[in-house]
Image 1 (cartoon, rainbow, N blue to C red):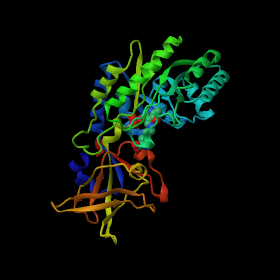
Image 2 (cartoon, protein in one colour):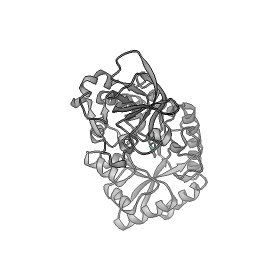
Image 3 (cartoon, rainbow, N blue to C red):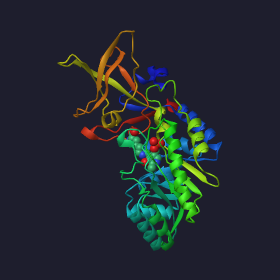
Image 4 (tube, protein in one colour):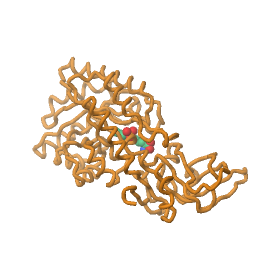
Length: 385
Ligand code: LLP
């Protein structure tokens, strides 16, 4: 892991900050390019995972398209030179202003999440004298067996158009002059590592495709969303996730003849290249005898442990001996949930020690807030050190 290799350079820096291994990002993107191009798959990067401009510039070099979910994300990627034709736009709540902007830019497709949204896109495109390309985001009712907060494709979720309503919505296209149905979009959830879930998902999509074909809707574009997970427990051993298996699963199980197949990956692209570097402020022992270590980062910089009880591996970069301790590692803000790890055994910790919280490149900096009026975290890039 990068922080271990360059720890001397990091010691003097003010903490907390995000450290990005740009070499690892490049290796990840290289793998994505190789493995997706075997099958002619097109990959979009889900900007919500991390909108850092330096990362985005490298991602652009590898020819990925973009999956955005707000007008501001679209504006950012356009300013960095991503072609509008490579951008898809999802999100359950697009404002009229955002829709207008995306139509004017001429994006590849809206991933449309409701019947009403379809009507609004049609109206706005009509007013602009333009035609908007739309993929219907269908909720396929697949349980991804992941954390409930990052599961999106089950029947009771707010996302997408219910598969029970899809017939009606598809027929509506005939009466809407300013939208063009380009295809179908799905996204079932995030941090999925079991390929059998993607296999089941492909089979659900094949069934839906059958319906569209039978009813005379020629679908040539499928966007299968994102969701590929990473190894949070063993980031050193598996810094690049298994893209080969992932794409091969879709090649094998998706009925994709004559179809352009797109993906929207976020976490798998950037999670492992980012670490949150923080320093031990204080140590204490609570009434139950638990050792509590307070670090200078918090849920304001990395909210995943507080929000999802997510596991992130932690390393003591200042370790001096083989002696260990078992710690609760907590952040600075005034919330009981602001804990990075419980019962974690690490080389003995003391004030001033530098820690790396690993696998923090996705949904880390992009979910940061200024709660307790902390500063937004700085970013440090390996190729600038
Ligand atoms: N496409 C759509 C429509 C999405 O909603 C998402 C993520 C993605 C693609 C990218 O999914 P990924 O490849 O990253 O799994 N904050 C949570 C994750 C939320 C995911 C939201 N949607 C976390 O930290 O685990």
